[in-house]
Length: 157
Image 1 (cartoon, rainbow, N blue to C red):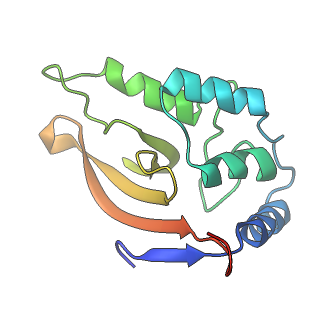
Image 2: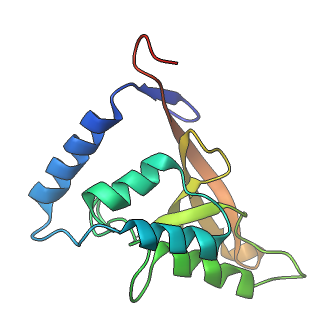
């Protein structure tokens, strides 16, 4: 499904399903992120998070759920999505950041593979996969994408 946009008309139902699955597969879900934590994260990052990502952290849990290695918490102690994003500019090569701007890492698959949300598109939740290319000095390569664009319910704009 590379590059395919999946239309979602009932985001509330999707979030209920994600919560049910997460709650069934994790012994105890972490607390959800507060509105203030999301605002603080956006202030630190310098960009707005897509509404779907915000809702996942605010309504399901602040990370700690999902496939295999689980989503990184947005904020908090230890490793977070915000800390991973903010650390990357410190590892510049020839004055250029290796990680793309406004693309937030949300999951570390291990072995240099990351899932990240492209925050440059405010409506669509675009999830991209990146891998570190050690042969190119640790640069990142965009490996794959999926996109989910929330659509209004029938009869709504």
